[in-house]
Length: 271
Image (tube, rainbow, N blue to C red; front, side, top):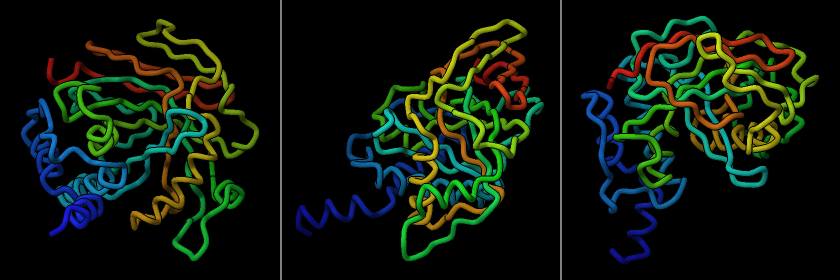
């Protein structure tokens, strides 16, 4: 096999080795300290192939179907990145997450959208206007960052992308159907931890306009064989970076005009 054919095979075929390591880390609760250089994904497409292998295994092991996605971008013009979310890690506001099943609690305040219409595969890409017409509601959300590695941000960024984009848990607040009335890039947000205000700011999501992210995802999800459908929830990235908590806490995130989202967490189970 020539080098070019080897490169093509590695780019397009799911990396079963990395997927098996990530699945073993989940099953045994023993984190990975490193990834052999030979199986680090060479590009996002390779990382998504690993995600897909892991996602199928998680669904088969009782984590439920894919009910949503996380999507984000480093800048308003950067290519987005995403990961699918399973039913077992998506909860409604008020859910008690103690005792925890996460090794880390990296708390992030996010804005999520739920879809009211399917966006199935078709011959032409979905447009921004069409994706907007499919949105049913806007929600406040809390994502808990977690990792199957020894610690967050210790690996190549594509290895973390392969690891479900470092997803732990998503808690979603009640939706507001008049989502077009809001400007997410400047929407005021406050976060309370045990009643103490930890964040009070406007905007903050480095990805910019979430509609750009949602449109990209609508077409990307088709390529992955998992088109967006009515009922799916998509969270669009942190508005405040990540706040790591080591102790049990009650968290409340409120975006101006949206219903607040609340959760209680225990200590990370590695503690």
